[in-house]
Amino acid sequence: MQPFAATGEAVLRLEVRDGRTSVTVRELPPLAPPTLITASEPHQSYPHKTTERDCFTDAGREAEVAEADDALLLTPEGWVAEGTVWTVFWWDGMRCAPRRSTWGFCRGSVGRACSSS
Image (cartoon, one colour):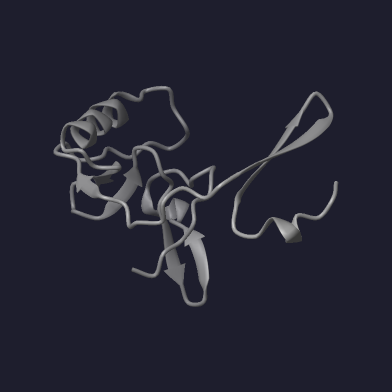
């Protein structure tokens, strides 16, 4: 693979399939802060990834109706558990980290850019 240093600011997607690697380069999307809402139904924790996606579908529909980019699912105690589209990361000192699995919900599998705001 060739280095992408000359690409500048861009989104790089690395995909490995059938033993072959491919890289897709595209322009950055608009960098305006996302518009978020909180889902009306509390998030119920689960011990492992599941195909039971109704809570995400319902919350995503709420975000669409509100013309928001995503909906945050909150625990019954009011803590942020997940996003419907994005994985939620936190600043942990100087590093950006996914939530802890000890919080009662699964770790994210896809990283998203962290924001200090």
